[in-house]
Image (cartoon, rainbow, N blue to C red; front, side, top):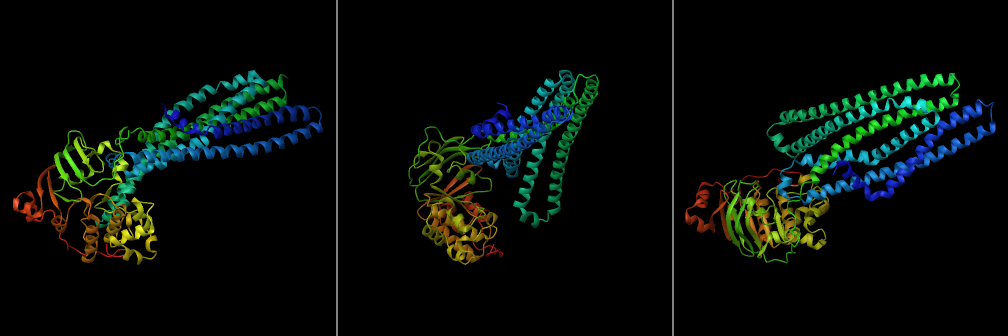
Length: 591
């Protein structure tokens, strides 16, 4: 299916608006075609050259005024409908791309550059808006005008019309060849915009690291490279477009000169009236506008089709984590989790986990420990089905997670990531994120249980205080407690906690630990542990190494076993002291 046809399918539901715009366009074009005939064949031949006919002159003047009013009304109607059509189609397309990306797996999204995805949803969609809102109607309008003018000139004088047609095939050939080249260049332009957006997003997301390592000059050079690449691509596009217009105009003027020469001879020999020549020449003069506009519109089409190609690349990616057709709604669970001979890899032939067998009872707290890269995060990511095992099965209360609807599974799982993610909305909205319909009492109770209520009420606007982008207005401890409140409000049966490694001051650490203990109470909890106190308090410690479970037991049992856990404990290789470091002050507190 061609890109153009796929875009047309987005316009199809709005056929009434589209038909109305076309009707208005036809009326405006007919009015434009009527003016030269009125002035040439009537005003010159039948009024001025006929000795003066005042009555006919008055009729012509009234007719011109009436046609001007008709043209003005339908021009407004046409532009309004095309603008509505363009905005509606683009809004729907942007929504579809966003919803499609939302349904894609975590694995797919983590493999993409965020800035490039943003560019596709904004810049590429913006290119499409240009052709839907004005390009299609412009193409039809100017095409209609072109045909109308050719019909009119053939009716006036077929010999002059044939001379006019001698240059049209050349113009069509030039426009066609140039259009193909412009589309290819435009695709590259959109790619450079995406690269530039991605670099900006990376730099400003990691601005603390950039400044901490004094890498401003390095990042400035990296940005300059992408900026220069974008400049070069845009200049190639501008050059191709700039070259096309004068080439078309030169061919058009050649045709105009031939018409002027031959038409003058026709008048001289009495085979054509002066008024008819004026009418003919006016039509030929009008011919330049649709030809030039069609050329520019085709350029715009090629640029938009390049953007559409990039959008459809995303939409053509198959949703890799869909519910099965017969998937069931997971009922309310107790919280039992079992891994049955599970293996997993992000790429074929590269296993991250191998032969994992583990059963966790409802309400049990499991600490996952092991060297970096052992597979701890990959293991817990299989529970909410962010990924699926390459072999084996993950069972929740005996249900294979692949056999249940994803929504019904994830709504019963809480997640507190290592890097606390807050949105740039109010603290109230951040806490209620997992349960938007929560009552005021529920939100405040969750905040109190997370030791967050006191500091929230002390903020300038209380619960309505904006958290800032990624929670930038709050300290590390404050962000963690809001994340805990968010999880408490959802009241999940299974909790996944990736313990933060960032150092907090003693008081903030105590408040966070108290909140975590309340959060874990009565829930099946998987902790990617970084603190000794957390590990010691776990019901079960699972030690991973090279994607395999090598030890399972309590803290005391594993120390007595003198295995990998005891070795790491003795070397202090994986655990952070509960009192290491002091935070620094942020906008609203310690950070």
